Amino acid sequence: MAGEWRIAGIDVPAGTRARSTIELTELPDGSPREAARGLGSRARPGPTFYLGAAIHGDEANGVTIATRVLAR
Image (cartoon, rainbow, N blue to C red; front, side, top):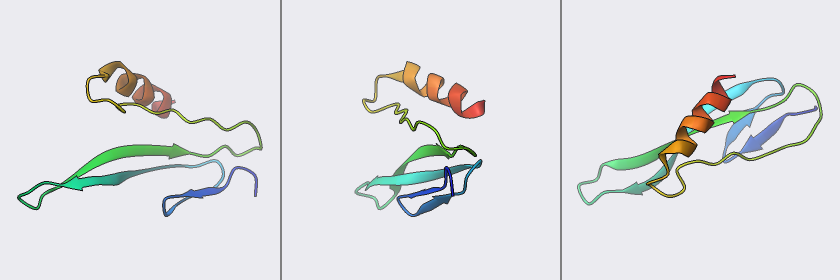
């Protein structure tokens, strides 16, 4: 089906969005640390792109941009 894909155990049917988290690490006290991720899939065939943000902890602008893109 056009646009349907699976990434890191998350199914994203064509024309839908999904939100999940990625486990990053566990702190010495046992509490987990996770990062949010948003996934989207087109209803029609077309180009695919990756939008990453917060790869480095001090890059706050990218998080704002990614949030705005995912909201549209």
